[in-house]
Amino acid sequence: MSVLGWIFLGLFAGAIAKMLTPGRDPGGCLITILLGIGGALLGGWIGRTAFDVDLGTFFDLRTWGLAILGAVVILLIYRVVVGGGRRS
Image (cartoon, rainbow, N blue to C red; front, top):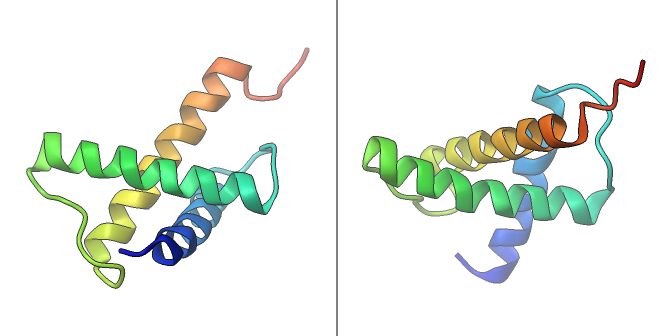
């Protein structure tokens, strides 16, 4: 994929991951893109390690699924480390 493809994948995968894990998360568009790109990298690693599959092309459903899975994992790790934003 080209750099522009990674940016679009990051934006959409990050936005979908934020919708799937409701709650307050920091950042705007740039953080969402970075979340999605990081999610694609993490999802690619998880897919390769656990399921013996790699990221495909931009329009491949496997690419999107792994990117969203990785972004959700990153969001969940962030919430555990920061405390989920719930202060008593």
